[in-house]
Image 1 (cartoon, rainbow, N blue to C red):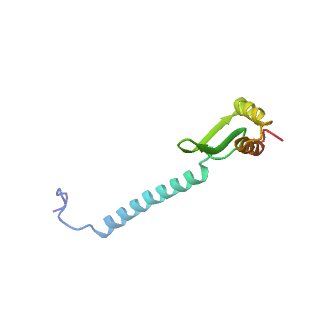
Image 2: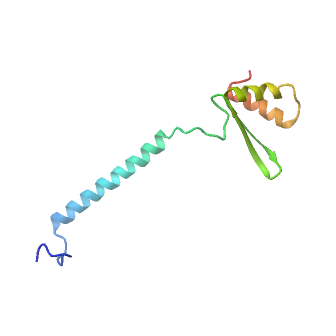
Image 3: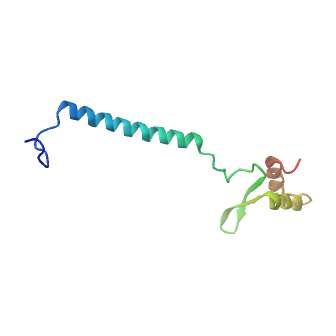
Length: 103
């Protein structure tokens, strides 16, 4: 009864082996893709100050808030808080140093 749809006989040894090899190839490619994605994922971390970007966590009216500035805007922000003495300005200055904007 070969060629019948659906087949009525169980898979033969050769058919099982072919199916397992195909499944192993698919699983291996999937695992390799996951590993490559994990190793090569270079998205910026918006929770840290780095590469000319300043990120500060502070208290807000609805809980914690994150403030972030990059490039020229970060430079202006760092210059603005340089003479202030409040707690948020101290955090901003610390993150400016971490980002390499202030000495």
